[in-house]
Image (cartoon, rainbow, N blue to C red):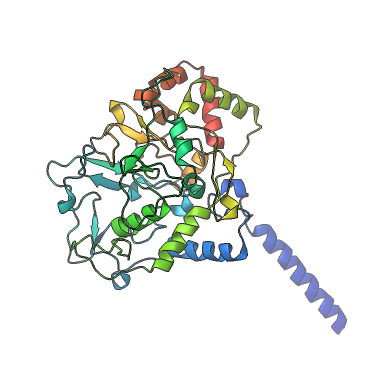
Length: 398
């Protein structure tokens, strides 16, 4: 009798386990996620990745832990849900610079508007006479690969005088380095300035530069790299450790590159061909390569981001009258297209594209292109409805 009870109990447990497994949602496939480390990391590298992941996504700053009196966000992850693109609610506002002479409103809070404040403090307002632009936070994945593209390769893609007559004249954004940045050993400076590559205007040199700026300008957090408090303008003790900053940098460097989906689908294949025929690939370069890295998983790799990391004239429709570095107000860095199809995952189920999220679909974003992209836009407009659908389907596969 007791044996029968035991067998019955075991059967009941097994049925329960099987039933629960059927109710549990399956994990999404790897190519539908932006989060996750690049393959091939060592045990120690995975440990650093996880430490950076916690600091980036889980650490929420408060007034007790250094949150600025005025700020934009309380954590890194709040602007980059699932390491994806930001939403209009997380859009940043930059103001005060109209040309390469620099920002004339640094003493009035520039370049970033701190639109939130702790109780008892007043959020910033855009000063009278200052031009501004809104920047939607980008996706974070694959950044380590982009960081390792050599200056030489970037310059090979540049064509400042449009020597080949294709209407495309991409240029790098040269700017001086902050004191805490050590240039890459293979850097190619010009008059003391170095090629920058991150951000909407390519105004950040590397991921350390980008991370330090984000802590300081977005969250109001000081560090040994940037000790200036955004509210008082005074140098104060660091509110985030060097170890944490470097862990976040390592996390960003070793986030995997987005994985294309459905690349063998007939409509996707035709869409890619149409993308190239329209001249889109002249700026959105499919294939780049990394140089040497102490992180073996990133060293000397070929990858497919669909960017040239250069600035391009995008026409008057995308000229907000604001700029950074040596970029003009109508120049924007070519955004990588990889991960584009997964953007709605972090944008509330829809698209908010271009630098400020004004385009609500891929087709709308294409039609807002001008300047150097005018010819490609016009070629897209001449496509049949099915061809347009296939080209967009290709972009959604990235």
